[in-house]
Length: 316
Image (cartoon, rainbow, N blue to C red; front, side):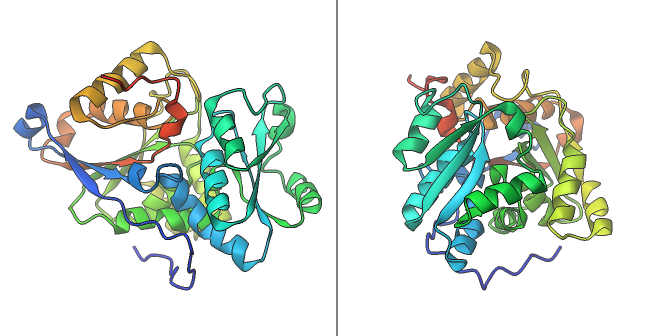
């Protein structure tokens, strides 16, 4: 698979590559299963994981277009909003977040508080209006109202977000058979999919209940200008695990929280209850299947640990 050429996009906020860690367990060793974790959570304390990957070229485009800043969308626990606020502050541009839920305010939770502290202006709208966030006419309306802002879809779900996420697999220097990743807007999983070798499989774990992973990935890739035949072929490498949402987005029952704290105790690796905790639980459960014997498996840690503040206690 060839990568999109991004050499002409020179971003000012250079954040380094993240390392790859190895997880060890006697149970996995007995079956010759090799587990690796791509530590994108270590890229930056705030603009971490796939959030920076998806913002990187959007920030550069905003600067090239000489816009005042970025306007984007997110829910009450949106890691994307926090990362956008931090990236824009670092780049010296403004940020506006359109937030789902007009009953909310800047002090409703730690995520929204942090957005405000990073200089983001939050605009709270009804869920009915928020449902129009991908509607063309609604975008035109926002474009007229905020004409000096670069509009970025929820979760950075556009072409520039996808090509930023392609860089994740380019940084892997070990042989991998299977890749596990949490899925929200599908932007990261689309970028990773574009960079997979033919023999590799991508396991996606949607955190939204009744989410059409394949349909949403196909739609985003086609909107991004990628060829339909190529897209259909690539999607054959995707395996969807749609039974690890734990009730849906923003839902984190006690058994999930217990898994996250126990996992941290054993491996000293922090996970969040919105995305990575669910994805890791899925991967650990699936490793019990015989098909993974003798395989090398990669877990992509997409960051977002601020989403667990006040929810998960990592103290020992």
